[in-house]
Length: 263
Image (cartoon, rainbow, N blue to C red; front, top):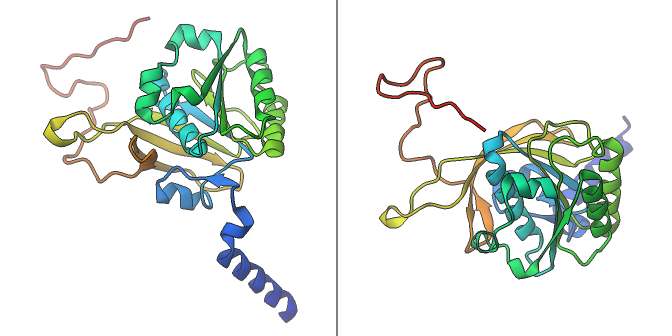
């Protein structure tokens, strides 16, 4: 490499370092946790698809809560959020609860919920909603691993998001990761929270893992809490006492028995 080329590359790096706001103004939204936002290059891309998977079936509520928090962050300027759900999601996990969303900081008055009979309709409605640049975010929630949600369908969603600049949050319950056009892919589980003053219930806590980033970032894991008042995620201090894992294959003590899940 010649000296001229090295100088040009050094100049490009310097410009990118001192003018990040000029090059990406309005193109990202932050989650509020510096470690996460910095790793993502300043936050979540708006003009992109982000997949959020529930780690286990019991983590459906945690994944939905994390998604709602991201939607609130993306629409922090008061724009509306469209949440498109498959009817089977309502039957399996229940309807969205307005007081609960308000408790998370997502104003139900700015939320429009659309229910589709199957995954194909949900994806089509989500793609149509993404074409509206006035929205703050679009949440798309099909159930499981439908055939209609293939690589082509995810590319269609990504193209719509790129054209409008509206982020698509693809909430995946009872699903396994497959090839997609998503910019990021996350696994979410419920995490223990720290009690507040007078031992009152603490902030909602999430165990999140970055499974995939299209720029090739390595997988990372965080424990985050959601603050409703400030409408942001943050990394809390360590729990006051360590959590000891149960020994594999046997109960922790003779007085504890294992319970089998049914249904």
